Each structure stands twice: as structure tokens, then as C-alpha cells.
Length: 484
Image 1 (cartoon, rainbow, N blue to C red):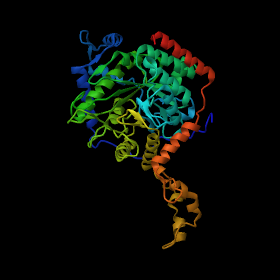
Image 2: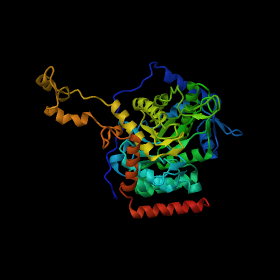
Image 3: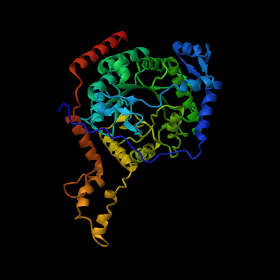
Image 4: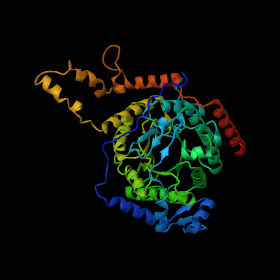
């Protein structure tokens, strides 16, 4: 079914917002960030970045490659970053307006294993899996943009470019890639310009953005930061993500970890603003934990406070936020652990006001994709959407004339108002699919069947064959350039 009917995207539009009770808390976090940048500094493993920062007044230690930032330089550079912009899509109806107040969701990324759609075997993921999951992303309204949910593990050094190719060819939604390295970034820009219709068209409507991780604590590796400079030059938005882990790559306190993560993100943003004033940037702090008994990585300890503070901090610095949310450490779909971890995180995420929200699809601490788990997570997402929506309070909603007509002790089943509103007022979840013998079906089975149906039947609006051919040419040139 080529060009299958795709429902409109369904972002979170929350009538509720989390806010700090103490107005000075964010100011203290910003001051801690400035102090780290001025006194401790951040290491940049890029001669190009070091030269540019030195040229603009940062204090560069040539021997250690550590850069210390005068606070005024930081504040002036951060003031150049745009607070809002649009992440465009191949289908303009899927554009993400970051000034709209909505929160746009996507999957987790970038898993390395997948439960096969057909055989149900657990195996390493390939480019064809990236394409298959991209089609699910295109089909599900709660997923407003694309991440490479799983890796193109069969393409080695150019895997990230093949993932981008699979995205362009299998969804009309905005793509947020995970391309690192200067040469790889230049190839990604060429691919995006091909689909957008040229360099200026891409700058005006960036069909892709890129996620670039820092190295905690306080390091920017050469591949990441030089890719960011390439994307900034092309007008491609960059989301910098920091993953400070309490007690290992960050202080063992939430405030300390946030300050270290903030210093990493701000220092990278300052560099891009000095290189390209007004370059669009997002911030993401994914605070993480370890099990103090054995050092194992944990996504969801009992006390997960402070992750949502990253959104307020990004907004205080004047840039959009890409929140860190959901995922699960559970290993099988439908388990109590998977449900409680994703649902409790969504309950907070729906109210924090972040512009972007990577969230669902992977298990086993962001490493394994189960098709049915994505559908179950999408159901949780939709529940969170409805939980924070504004309730209409107009005359028709109050239905006072109907209340008067029915009176005490009556019922509303026969009323026209009921027939007009009942279906909309009772949105049915994945747990409400009727069973043939009465009652309801197992939601895990329902999710598995729906994932398999979409895999077999759903096809997004295809990319023009001429563009596919040109993308293949760019990939072949990249493979030759990188000696693959």
C-alpha cells in the first residue's frame, strides 16, 4: 500500500506546567555553570574549535586543550542563539514549530538489537530494520519526528549515513540524525540538500537536525564538535546532549550533575554562536545513575528527581529543550517494570514544557527494540497527552439544559447530547479491544498484531526515485572517501 494514509501528528499540548517554587534556583544553576566554565574549563579535542575560541577571547591552554570562558563572553554568545525555530519535514503538515508550546515526541535511539518482525528472533539490527521502524514512526501520530531507533549495524563506518538514508526514504517527518565526524557531516548535509532542493532551501526549511553527545565530564571530542560546526554552517539545527552519570562522570549529587551537564552544553553552544551567530541549537541533559552496589547503569532509580530541571535550564539559557524521558531497563514487553517506568516518566514529561521528547520503543536500557513495546509505549504516550489537555468549559460542554431535562434520578443514554459526545468523551485505549468470548483481549497480543500489520501493510509517501538515486550516489562517494 504505497502512500498509505497517515494520521496527523499528535503532540502533547499541556494545560499544566511544572515550575520551580524557588525563582532563584535556575539562577543558581546558571551561576554554577558560569563558574565551572570560568575556573575549570572544558576540553575541546579540535584544533579548529580551539583556534576559533582563542580568536574570540576565551583562554585556551594549548598543552591540555582546555578552554576557560570569561562569563561575559558566554552571556553575549548565548544571547545570539534563537529561542525558537521550525524543524521542517518533507510533508509541511509535519513541521515542528518550536514556538507553538507543544511537545513533540519520538522514539528512543540508537538500539543495537531487534526482535525480528517475522521470525521473532533476537538479533543485531541492520539498515532494513532502520527502514522498517521508520515506517512505524511515519504511521503513528504520537511520533512527530524520526530518530534512528536502531542502528544500521551492517554498514560499519558509514552506518550513520545509511540510517539517514533509511529515514529520508521511509518517513515524511523531520529527521534528527546522529551523525558524527566532519566528513560524515558534510555527506549528511549533501543528502539533506538533495532532498530539500538545494543549500538555501535546506537553510530555510531544515529537513534534518543532528544529535551530538558531549563526553562527560567536560569534554568535546573532535568528531562531535567538528560535525556540529559543519551543521551550523549549513543551517542544520544541532541538539547537544549531555549524559552526566551521578558518581562516575559527574558529582554524586543532582545539582552537581546538572551543572556539569549544563557547562558542556553551553560551551558547545558558545562555540557555534561564535562561528555562526544565530545557529539553531537545542539542549538535552540526560541525567543517569549507577547501582552503588555493582556499578551497573540505571535509568530509573526510585528517586529520579531533577531530570525535568534540564528543560527549565535550557529555556533560561534561551534555547529549546529536548528532554530525556522514558525508555526502560525492563527486558520484556508488558512487564510491570516497563509500564511503571515509562508511565511515571511520561506523567512528568507531559508537564515540563520541553519542545522535543525522545521517549519510547527500546528496552533493556535503550538497547533492544521490540515491535509490540513501541505500540504499548505509544498507548502510554496518548494517555499522557489526554491527561494534561485543557478541558473545554463552554455552554455545550456544561450541558445544563440536558441536566435540567433529565433531572434527579433519570439517565442520559437517550439524550441527543450523549449520542453527540459519548465517543469523543470515552477514547478507548489498547486495553479495550473486545475479545470474541467477552471482555477484552491481552493488550500485548493486540500491540504485537498491530505492529505486524503496520510492518506488512503501511507504506509512507515515497521519496522520488531520482532523489533516491542521488542519495545512493552520495552514500557511494562517502564509502569511497572513508575507504569502506
